[in-house]
Image (cartoon, rainbow, N blue to C red; front, side):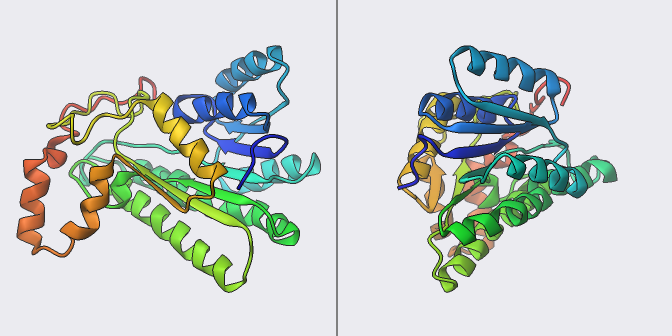
Length: 270
């Protein structure tokens, strides 16, 4: 088990959405938090909230799109002690077609959603390997298992995140390390990041409640689950891959997945 109590847990993208909920619940479980986000005001508000509850919190305003910023922030964090659990949560979405998205938006998607995984993990993994204990959590997406329109950059980045976790897991296995990895692949979550998205069959593919998703993630960390996919129907993606492409695409159309982003607005200001 990866106990949260007494462990030093670093969460990226902690000032809002899923990151904020994970920070609150990990703190309530007794974790010592290191919180990163580009939103300094949001981080400060969260730090005040948790400090008022007697929680141990360190915050750092970090642009995870920058390797140099990550390396500098990691050095500051490690100066205060080892990181036991790394939660790579920060993510961005443009919600545009390939030709609508500007080059700088596509670049930012990969800097935040993909390359940041490498720079944060490279910073904290050596210490975990030395202690032969630690946990690297990658918040990916169901979009890392299946593509859809208006998310070419996002889906590609999340496919990369899933591949990152899988390859890292196998590297650690070959090294006979006890460092654990967990990849999280949820359908849309109602945090505001995907405001405006729609699902055709809410019973089969519901827009997920962030509070419940957070509970599932923390349980997956505690019990060293290697993969968390929500909801259950998303797990059938691999079976669908065995079908001819035309049949697979027809199923995606029938489920409404290929039109789910048609009314996307996203979180205001992001």
